[in-house]
Length: 253
Image 1 (cartoon, rainbow, N blue to C red):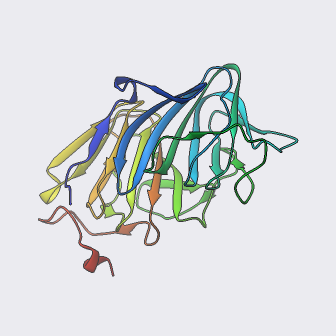
Image 2 (cartoon, one colour):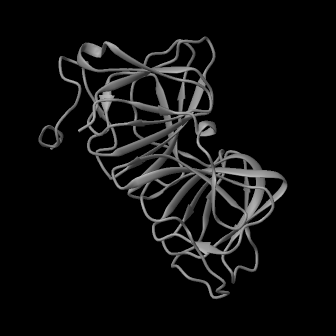
Image 3 (tube, rainbow, N blue to C red):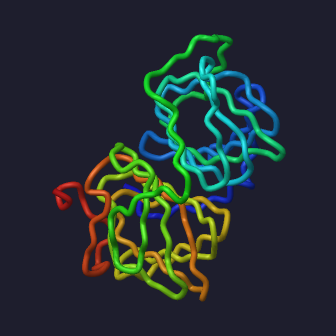
């Protein structure tokens, strides 16, 4: 098990175009999942992914729709979206580029399709930033989620200026994140002696079971978007870092 927090600038990764109109950067892969940033400048061809997509709109406005949808789902900055597995979809950008961060199953690239028949069960869900529900608590952190009952928990996390959150870990969950504001610093490692600095616009991955705490070294409140992938317990609050960096699966039970 890795004991390093991985921090990556998406801008440093060359984009690919797996289907027409879809510019993708796979930023981090871990635990059978991938954190992918994509951009649509006009519109994409129809395509599908095998796994469920959990996304957050970083910038722009646009729509996403299945082939038979009479009214596309509207997207704008700050929205969260969920697209069921195997669903054929097409994105359209409006006015400016549509930029979305998504967590997907770690699978081959999306598959283009000419099918006009809707594939995939369940609706495309879009939840605005003012419709989130409070979720798991830790000292000095505010966490809200659009989808409280899924096996992936996307969250908007807020930390007040100068605040240091309580020590915690996320059990066996695969944990991806994105810094909307920055910088932030995450303390971890034996006795909390290591620090991962995350600048605005950077993505990160925290290994399962890693005891850590999030701190805000500035006077301004900061916001992050995170995805916990796996299931409960989502968060386990602990007294301190101790002399061990990680908590084993047995200790989580």
